[in-house]
Image 1 (cartoon, rainbow, N blue to C red):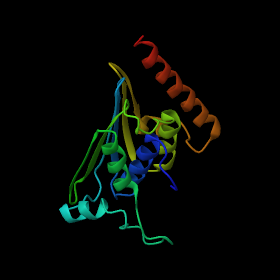
Image 2 (image 1 turned 90 degrees about the vertical axis):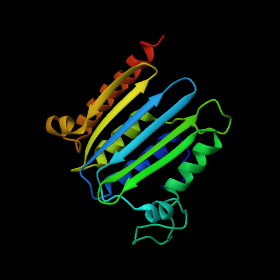
Image 3 (image 1 turned 135 degrees about the vertical axis):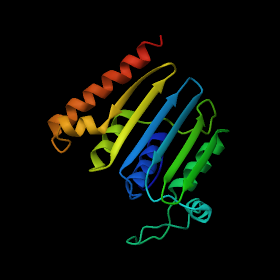
Image 4 (image 1 turned 60 degrees about the vertical axis):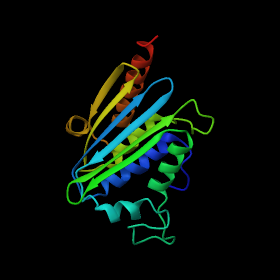
Length: 183
């Protein structure tokens, strides 16, 4: 990913890390209110020790061997972007048990990036996951919905544009419902 212009770009980047972690399952929880946008992404992958976490937050370190440019800005840029808004960032990881990344943006801060396209982000995460199982929980104020990739993979072909369009329409309707219920 060349630049991370929106909060959804950060979500996609960290979800890609989870998929590439060697695990089989991940959770994505998004809680949005008028003033805050919080997300937590966890996986059951290889995890990291404290030194690994320190390296992961270094923008000049990457585990990706087949890159022309040897740096990885995802986690460090997320941490910087969150803290610039007065929000908080946390990463917890345990070797051979997985990783949990939490970011809470202060939406009312002038330095906060725009949220971005949540529906397209969910579709992209689901589409690139292959055999990685996602449970997604999305909340807007007190309303929410869940997406289970196991159910979607059993009932739809995520390589077919027609099925992706159905899922996109479904998620768009869910987004509309949780925001209208709040009014």
